[in-house]
Length: 104
Image 1 (cartoon, one colour):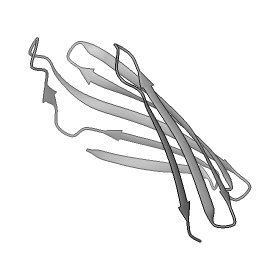
Image 2 (image 1 turned 90 degrees about the vertical axis):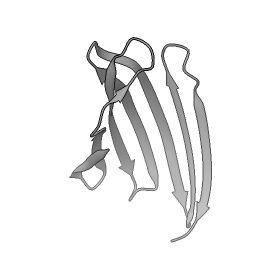
Image 3 (image 1 turned 60 degrees about the vertical axis):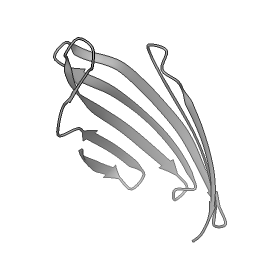
């Protein structure tokens, strides 16, 4: 997997990553790679951050099984609170992540 982030301003980032090798599905014999794109926008010197992303499998039959994610992060006096959620199509399970950290 390889990826890169592009900083268009101090407060706006676009990231992309892709699998370098393909994987085979056990059924139908199709091979695919995963592609993901995300954006991040921050305000007030990164005290508030909004994130969003899209991932999809890219294979011989085109785009498949997209997934979507979003989140928010808030930082105040060294305490960071992050909340993120992910969902997808084709009965994929979703996820919710909550994290709290302390540091400068």
